[in-house]
Image 1: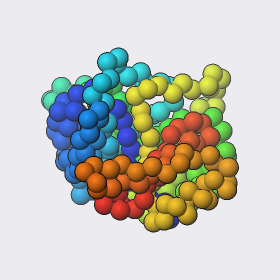
Image 2: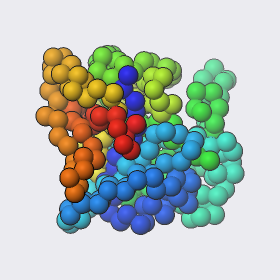
Image 3: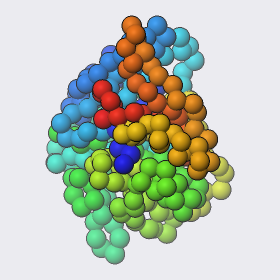
Length: 131
Length: 131
């Protein structure tokens, strides 16, 4: 059976990204591979076996372009309001908390923010399907 | 602790994507939310708690654009050669299997393929860090 193990994004500044994901989401560097032209850094924590893979291309000169196809990665948090307040205090400029409702039922509570390279991140209240 | 729970991509044809991820990677539809302007479908299996979230925007007319920033999602497989042969037979046109080496040590064996919307997918031999 195929196991979803990571999502890869290209980044422009490895220490900046590593620090961001550590501070904002408690992800640790679990593995690093360094080659002449690129470095791969894997970020994860005990909450999930799935990781973020950061690719840093050493000879990349032009900034990467965000298309319209890829969406985001999502993290579940036990206390969304507390997480949101912490993101605001840290200067990460999260969107206001919204909720997705259907027939009066709240299906999801969430906010969005961006990482240092502009990748969107969804943060969801741990509840229902999102856990 | 933040838990990485899904990666979202926008797709142009939900049944096409659902069938592809089921056939190629054994992912099942775990949850679906349908709204007037969009549908969300979650795909997963027992191998991982992380999922793929497919977003289908009903009023989307122009094709989505793949930028250069986002990379791929990766799946680990217990038998990479068998998986590769199956992808070839199914017409998914995987790249040849390659390996990443450093100082004579094989760090990863993998191939790439694309989903129906052109998102890149890495398939890795389950070994070392990739499991």
